[in-house]
Amino acid sequence: MKRSLLNTILFYAVIALPLWMFLAWLFWPKTKYVIAIVDKTVLFKTGQEHASLTWVLRNNKFSKTSTELYHVGKDYFGFFPNKNKQFDLKGLERASDEELEKLSVDADMAYITDTYGIYSKEWYLAKNITERQRLLYGGLSSQDMFFLKKMKQKKKLIITEFNTFATPTPQNVAKDFEQTFKIKWTGWVGKYFDSFDTVQNKELPRWLVENYKAQNNNQWPFKKAGIAFVNKSDKIVVLEYVHHLNAEVPYILTRKEEREKYNIPKSMKYPFWFDIIQTSRTNKIISFYDLKVNEVGAKILADNEIPSQFPAIIEHYRDDYKFYYFCGDFADNPISQGGSYFKGISFFRSLFYNDDIAAERVSFFWEFYRPMINRILRDYHDDIKK
Image (cartoon, rainbow, N blue to C red):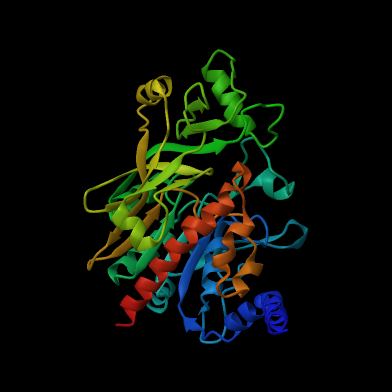
């Protein structure tokens, strides 16, 4: 009888667990944490390019005011989609130097999640376009750079990501960014594709295929998965699984000291956009990419001056200034905001993804991005409250 009663209590406790997790989140106290988020690539109101950051902020109850939490569709600077193909531009470009100075005083930190921008056909046709298009809005601006310099002077935390200072950023602004933070873009970006078959993979960029064919006697011999590299000169290099790669997906590797600090795994698959960045010794490399190339793939990389290992996370966290550069589109993951309302949901994270390649970006959020950003945000918040 007692065992039956205990089993019944346990059953209802488990059934009610989501309610308890929600109530724990609901009554968790808010912590004001003013973050200037810049995202210039918001095609839909879901704001996927910065949704992962917003998820972490809401789950931790970090709020933009003492009472109001961050909202993925409105709490950022950049491109704002509206109905009937209308849009608003609410980037830092509209701000005066005095307004940017004030923002640098009011903000605790800055996070540049995406500056790639919005392009004409992609916007007006509301679908994935695989050909080159006219830029509507994008690129790091001189006003963005002015604001970042002000934040650096005030020793406030700056986090930036893939493509912050690459195409379509003007060359003078890109150079200013490189000199300010002592990093340099090699001109190469890359991305994993689950298939290079032009018939099967409808999302394979047409310009990628056509440029490669123009550079290689009209040949496109690839069918399997692999990694495509694109240079700012439009040169294309392709590594295909088995023929050039021993593992189809790039890996992010982290040394023991850093992975224990940030609670991230030793090895993590990364199947999305990345850029190849060089850094000076004044910065620290937290994690690095490893392309599992075979002998043939290694030669192709060497012939094109592309390294098989290069930085994934660059850090400068010292008394003079605090800066991170994520050499990948880390905040862009297909994650639902609904889970952010449940305290302790990370204990059940394995329920939200499997071992399929298509789910790798979801697992990247749970196993890498979320714990890393959690640690960065909490450590910095503790620093500024001392």
